[in-house]
Image 1 (cartoon, rainbow, N blue to C red):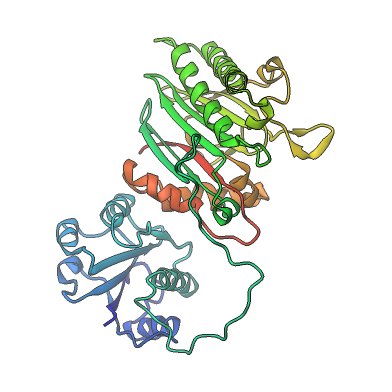
Image 2 (cartoon, helix red, strand yellow; image 1 turned 90 degrees about the vertical axis):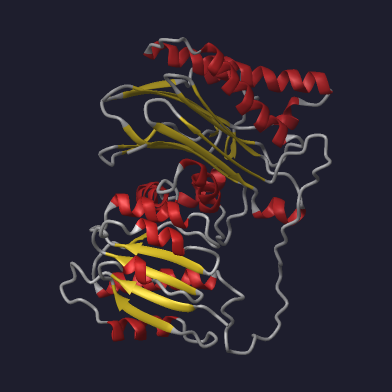
Length: 435
């Protein structure tokens, strides 16, 4: 028997508060065509968490204002595999409440971070109900459409998800998640997702990501192995791991801004030589290891920061300051003789890449820094329209609201979306200011 759907809406702050009867009708209209579902609607009141249903249920909560004290304990006792909770919220909701709700619901089946609704209007409410409908659809086959199945059609392509060869001497996992507590109240998270093309053919993910810290620095590295290179995955992983180790080793105990540039050079040099040394040792062509590389060192101070960065190849490195200003920190590389072809770490002498090192000084602290491969950055074009809502805003709403370790799964889910025409590996490394 399917669970009962409980829609609980906070009536505070509405110019014309919706009534329970209207809300029930709207929610049932969203779920029309599914096996009979019981929808119960009520307005949020004091002590709502202590009166949650005992039977199997999905509670859909719409928040407008801070919750009353003491809601955490009964809600924590209520949540389990039979009791699930999903939250949509307007800007009047309390950030601390949302973080607490996100932490409690992170481990439930089909976890979703609280969903922000822009306007406290009927249109905004309909947006929330549409989001709830999408969550409920993910619970298939719990909810099965009443309508008969559509006729069978022969599709031109049926995408498969075949595992890569775990016995290969150079095997790497099909997905990666990692995180770390950083310097000066920052956190670092990274995730890499195998693209549809590789999954369809059971081949390896070619992207790589690495994170590191010192007492003063936060370090992020991302690489995208060339799809035409036989050992692209080896090249990308060698590049980020060698660079990270060299940067850490070169970090002085009490760094100065000048040390950032020298450390970036050390990372570049280590990555570059690691590829050539591997090619020599294994008797392969160095072009078999072709890879892009993004390196970034963040040096946070009390009210400002320095950032050292270098970028070889495509992808995107971008930052958001605490005031919301967005700063592209690098420009993607393409071959000057062929704009459709990217450049790789082994495409030019090392000194050419060293000259691209940049050190920025910011008079304010940065809120979020993101490094990504082109499998993700291509889906964020045009940047001036999509970076704020689809990257920074979405990261806050769907990833950064969770405790650090739970952000790993949330970030992997964030980059594992389905989009027509998007087939490449996607990798994202994020530096985020806490609090």
